[in-house]
Amino acid sequence: GDSVTQMEGPVTLSEEAFLTINCTYTATGYPSLFWYVQYPGEGLQLLLKATKADDKGSNKGFEATYRKETTSFHLEKGSVQVSDSAVYFCALSDQTQGGSEKLVFGKGTKLTVNP
Amino acid sequence: DGGITQSPKYLFRKEGQNVTLSCEQNLNHDAMYWYRQDPGQGLRLIYYSQIVNDFQKGDIAEGYSVSREKKESFPLTVTSAQKNPTAFYLCASSIAGVNSPLHFGNGTRLTVT
Image (cartoon, one colour):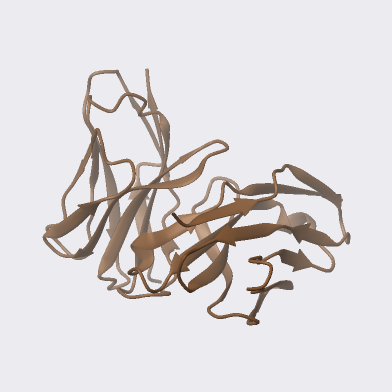
């Protein structure tokens, strides 16, 4: 079945450092790809998404490009802030197999940014 | 503002008791979902509902039950049959259809002792 693999955390960075969180996927169909973020004590929020190959999703300084050739959707940010400390989830939704009930999540990567 | 409300934020129960977690949304979304989150395991789908009076089992439905009598409400009951009920439970909703992003509540942390 479909699956998502994220780099294991935790990741600890200093403020203004460059961030990459790797995400690769396995899917039989044509998935849409998402990054969700979970701040401490809260639910998840959609950070960005891409629905087809070569699309770039971006939001709040974060970017991720849908790479079909490498089945990847790595999350990047050029300069992280303390407020970016959270858990980040990569997810896929196979649009040929139904709606959002088919959303498959990675295990999450915890990011801590120190001042 | 529209959103999803889960209550309570923290819930404590004795083993052997059923407990019901509340989820209400005012986003006018057709679809609603319950996920369980455990450390290091990401999110796992318990139940989902795409329309009132209809719901489907997710990947880990055993020991749980739901109802969808109203569009805005999707309560989850954790029964005594659930072998390991202590977890963080997240409710979500979305517009029905593909690629629709999920909107999450802030979760309920259930502890069973």
